[in-house]
Structures are given as C-alpha cells and as structure tokens.
Length: 245
Image (cartoon, rainbow, N blue to C red; front, side, top):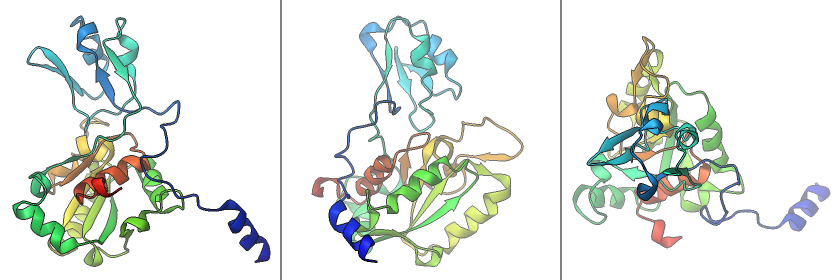
C-alpha cells in the first residue's frame, strides 16, 4: 500500500484537457479536399471503398459519417488535391439537437439533463475497435466523470445511448428494446463509421444498416474508430459545453 501511495504522489495528475494533446504522428483524421489542386480525375472517388466521396455542385464532397479514414483516396491523388489531416473534431448534431442552443426542444432537453449525463452503451454489431476507444474515456487520462458524465449498467437509468457498430439483424431487437427502455428525454449517439454511415461492410443479409435506419440519432461521431478526444468533443458539443473547457 505504501508503494502504491508513493507512486501516486510521484506521478501527480495525469488528466488532461481533451483537446490539449496533439494528434499522434500516424493518427488518421479528416480527409481534406484541396480544390485548387484538384483536376477532377475522380480517381479518389473510385478508390474509396465505402463511397464516401461524391461530386456535388462542381466540387468534391466527403461524407465524414461514412468515411473510414483509410487514406486510399490520398494515395490515388497524384496532384495533392486531397490530403489527410489529424483533425478529429468532426462530431455533428442532428434531430432534436440540430437547432441552435438555447432554443425550443434542445433548450428543454438540456435543462432536464442539467449538469449530468448518464450513458448506456449498446454494441449493435461492432468489431470492438470503437468499444476500446470508448472504454478509454473512463481512464485517468480522459476522466469522463470530471464532466459529470458517466456510464450506467441499465438503460432505465440512462439519458443517452452510445451505439457502436453497424446494426446487425441479430442485435436489432436488443437495440430497439434498449432504446424503448430509456426514459424521455433521451439522446442517441452513433459512434464511428459503422454506426453513423452503415456502409463499412456493404450490404449483406446480416446487416440492417446504420443506427439512424432504426432509431433517431442526435449526435454523429465519425471515425474508424473515433479517438477518445473525438467522443468527448461530441458529448460536450451535444451538451453545449465546449465553451466552458
């Protein structure tokens, strides 16, 4: 016990702001289009395994909810028209949280949730990569509890469902029953490309699709898998608390 206490004293505080650390050198973040260097060859779109790159209004657009950040599009571009960055703050709001903060339904939801948010995790068919990143939220480095956010064991005690993985047929009922068990008002976060886009594994007999094909989604966090910092960014964005950090 003495040795443990001594180690704690020498180690000090390891918890850091979610946005304080620089992305790791090999971290794959958002793919950015450099319009001035694009020659409209569309080799990047052809190389994308999930069809996340399309051309709209004479310029390339990237569906970040579907993108798996694999970098194949970057490798195909000989002119530097598309580059990969370390940007992970890509979370977006939808549904009942889409309206500006302080207005209407979103204001009522945030007033009910107050300073606390209880999360129930649902694995709808993931490869567990997103689950590992999500588990890191509770370690001392990210310390999810410092924001008044925590995981709970029962959906009846939860305010939000955090769903990972593309929804499979075998787990469809589990997702729907868990969603119904969460008391209102309730939020749903789709974590990672499989849950948010549903195109990672294509269309098979075993797959029902993205989470929003079955239940309404309020927060999308892109990535394959999304970093713990990206998950924290999405949670604080939903609670309108980014400006406080």
